Length: 145
Image (tube, rainbow, N blue to C red):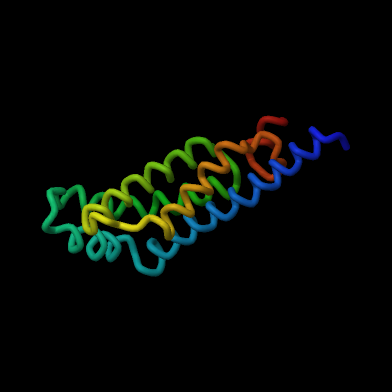
């Protein structure tokens, strides 16, 4: 193997690992919110009740509280199987913007070092490294056909 193919192989492995970690994180967060907590409780407790005194209208809070668990579940699954990756990764990036705003609205000096920053770095890593050579993605197999 030449140096270039070794480097491509290493980038593919790095992208695979990052993709699977971020996919599992979003899939499991969505799974828990949909099937254990329930989207209704998520919406009522973490959105409507938590931000009732904010400028955000109740209908928007309720909608966001119901949509986000399914969004995380679907996007996490897409990331894991490797299909529509650019769209799925971008969508969870937008989700991070929304949740960061919500946390910063509640706590203006919100510390993003926990879940938010870690997930953001994984998303950016997969986008930068690419997944075109990753034989574990649905996109690779569909393109190959």
